Length: 248
Image (cartoon, rainbow, N blue to C red):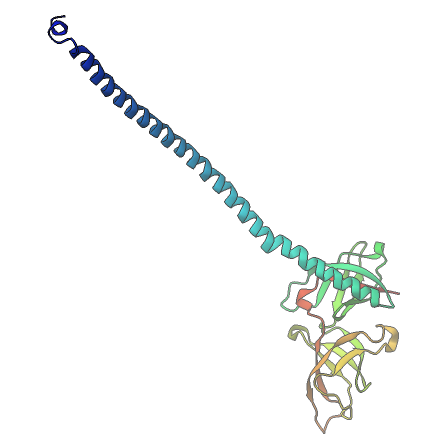
């Protein structure tokens, strides 16, 4: 009261100054509070984004794995089956599609098992082929499986003909070498490297005209009646999957 009586405008000046100070403090407090609130929100959002990124990375890794493995396998199978279908449509024989289910445990597979047997019409002695050429013949039959002797086996013998010269011979496997050789091919036969070898059809054990392979080595000895000829099979026996059995 004394101050007001002495100087009437002093209280209003004090109130004005205090209001300004309090207003500044309130503004600073509000900004600090908003900054803290925004910081907490950013931390929460960053955590949420990190979790989303982690899930997205897992999804991307999954898609990359499927692209490199599963989808590629589907595409490869589709292309392979397309070639098999095209091959089957061109054949005059009745073909039974089969799948290789196991190999013999050796470096060069000489025997394979297929997933169809007597219940599906497979019989002993039937010829087995691949779009690339001759595979072998059925040697044992079970209800839903069959054992196939490959032409690279030493026990295998196939009547063949040199397609260019029409000379006949017997193709025999060489087992672990993964190649075959021609037996009883006369020295007078003008066979040369690169000549294609096909089944002759003689003896009716194999149908005529199936590609077997091509000549890869020729040795002639004037003191011998027959020449030594090696044949590289047309079929890649390390990659057999889908085959055909020629039904009688």
